[in-house]
Length: 302
Image 1 (spheres, one colour):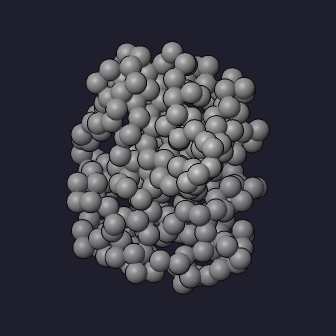
Image 2 (cartoon, helix red, strand yellow; image 1 turned 90 degrees about the vertical axis):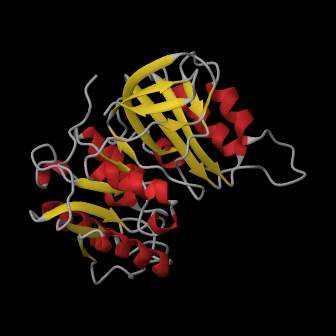
C-alpha cells in the first residue's frame, strides 16, 4: 500500500493552464472570479482562446479537448492544470489517450485539479501512480467558503491539511489510499482500462441529482462486481439533490447508502464536506489517509 507521487508544491509565480475537458462553459462570471483568486495569489493563469467553444453539450470536439489536455501536460513551464467545469465529456477525452505517450507522469508530475466529471481524468492519472486534487473547478472555487478555499491552497502549496469531520457509522479505523470521485462517473469506468485496482483503497463517493433508485443501481453494480471486497473503508460526501420527488414511493438516499454499504463490515463515514453545491473540501487523490468511523473523521496522513 503506497501513496501516489505528489507533484511539487505550487508557489506564486508558477504558470497554470486552464482546460475545458468536459461540458461547455456557461458560468463565465464564477469562472472569472475563480481565476482572479488564483491571480491574486500571484499565479500566472493561461486561458485558451477556445475556452468558450461549444459542440452540443461539450466544450468543443473531442480532439480539441484532448489537445488542450495534451498541450498543458506537455508544456514544461506549466506546473498545474485547472479544469474549467465538469458536466460530461472527460471519458470521451480518454479514448485513444495514453499518459506515457506524453511527458511521463511519474517523471514529470504536475497538478491536475477538478471533480465531478473530472473524476475520469483524476482516476486515470491515479492509475499512472500520480496524485491529483479532487477539489473545486473554476466555476465553483469562488463560491466556496473561506475555510475551504484556504484548505484548497494548503493542499496545492504543500501545507498540512486538517481532518474532516462527518458522521461515523461505526466499524472501527482503517488506513488506506484515498480514491475520491463522483459515483456515477466512477461506475462508468467499469470494464474500461481506467478502472483502478481497489485493493487497500478508501473510496470517497459524492454525487448530484441522482434519484435514490439510481444510487441503488450503481452501488448494486459495485457489490455484484466484487469491487468492494478489498476496499478498506468508504468516505461519503455530499449527495446533493438526490432525494426522491414528493409523493413518489421511495427510499431516501441515506437509506439506500446504508442498505447497500452498511453491511460490508468496513469503516464508513458519511456527511463529509466534499462534493457538489454545499462545500467541496479539497482531497488529495492517492494520499495515505486514516478513516475513523467511530469518531467520524477522515484524516490525511500528512
